[in-house]
Image 1 (cartoon, helix red, strand yellow):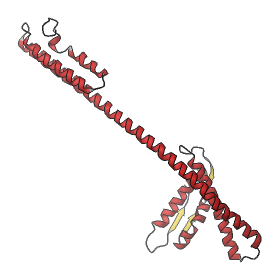
Image 2 (cartoon, rainbow, N blue to C red; image 1 turned 60 degrees about the vertical axis):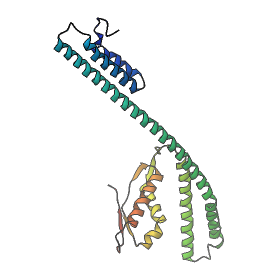
Image 3 (spheres, rainbow, N blue to C red; image 1 turned 45 degrees about the horizontal axis):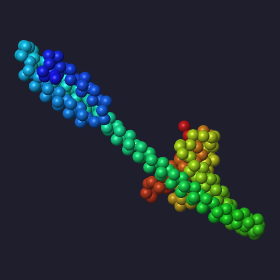
Image 4 (cartoon, rainbow, N blue to C red; image 1 turned 180 degrees about the horizontal axis):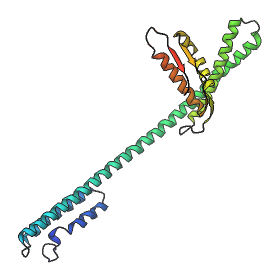
Amino acid sequence: IDLFTHLKIADGGYYIPIILFTILTNKKEYTIIISVICIILTIIGFFYTKDEIFFEEVGNRVLSFLGICFITYIIIKYRNAESKLKKQTENLELLNAKLKESNTELENFAFISSHDLQEPLRKIQAFGDRLTLSDGNVISEKGADYLSRMLNAAGRMQVLINDLLFFSRQTTVVTNFSDVNLNKILKDVITDLEFRIDNTHTTIIAEELPTIEAGPIQMRQLFQNLISNAIKFRKENENPVIKIYSK
């Protein structure tokens, strides 16, 4: 119809809206096929045009050809970007599903582990209290000190287990911050790392620290990791000195 009518549709310029219409389809192959057909019709149409100036007609056909190619290129680029974005979205959804599954497993593991640790810890605390009540007056001063340290450590372990239980139930980063005395946190961490500190002859110089709004569990982990790493990655044949201060 294009080639044998006098509507001059075969000039090619009118094909561009037709190609643009393929943006509504889901496949870039349709755009390529229709563009190829439009280019072929534009070239063939040149031989059916007898009443136009030759060079002017050639110019029109070249401009139409370039317009078709440009629009086709834009649509293909759009489709490629859309396809890439869709693939990335699918990958993100897959990773998100795996992350949810992993979080669920971690939560279950932490919950079970915490409950399994509760019973032996209760026994340590119970027998320690009984020993203090029954034989506290006959135990040596050094033995009483060891017993007191053991019960204090068991008490801190109880707090850590409860914190782990609480943390395992959080689906997002903890945002319900509270006032945290960093001096108390640091004191507990140093007590927990007492053996490592003594064995490596580590000196810890701690200045007065502030009370801040934070998550107690995270702050405890922060101090414990920093001090542990400072002890672990010390200079050879040199006793580490750790300075802790606020600014």
